[in-house]
Image (cartoon, rainbow, N blue to C red; front, side, top):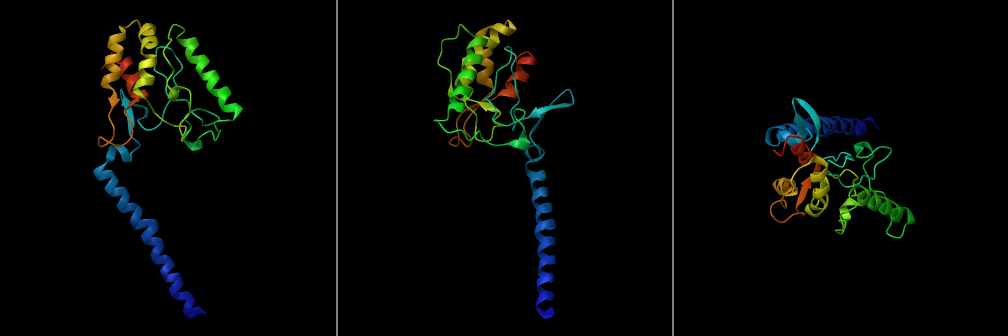
Length: 191
C-alpha cells in the first residue's frame, strides 16, 4: 500500500506546486506585463483618488447625471460580491412591477420626454453589474441632463457621441456608453 501511496503523494505535491503556484504566477506576470490596466481592475482615478472601475456600474439617481442600467444585486446595487441576474422570468409579476416602477421613475425625472424608453434603462443585465448603456439610452437622458446642468442639449449629445465605444474588434457586441466615464466627463466640464 505504501508503494502506491508514495507516487500519488509525490504527484499531488508536484501538481500543487505547478497549478497552485507556478501557473498563477506566470499568468499574473503575463497579465501585468501585457494588460496592466485591465489586470488591476480597470480602475478610474480622479485627482489621485479611485472613483470606480470601467467594469462595474455605479448607482446614479441625481437628474444631472446619466443613469445606468438597473442592478439586480442585493442588498445594495452594483454589489460585485452578489453578481447575478434577478432570475425573474418574463411572466413573473415581480419583473413587470419592477419595470413599471423604473418607467415611472424615468418619467417622473423627465415628464416632458415622450420618446420610447430604451429597454436597457428598465431591465437588469445578467450580471447585475453592467457599467454601460446603449447610445439610445444615453440619448433618451441627454435632454434631462442638459436641463439639470443648464447646458446646451447639443453639447451633451456631442459628449455622448465622444464617449460611445464601438463594437469590439468591429464585430463583437454592440456600441455602448460607459456611464461612469460619461458622468465624470460632465463633471469635468465636457472633457
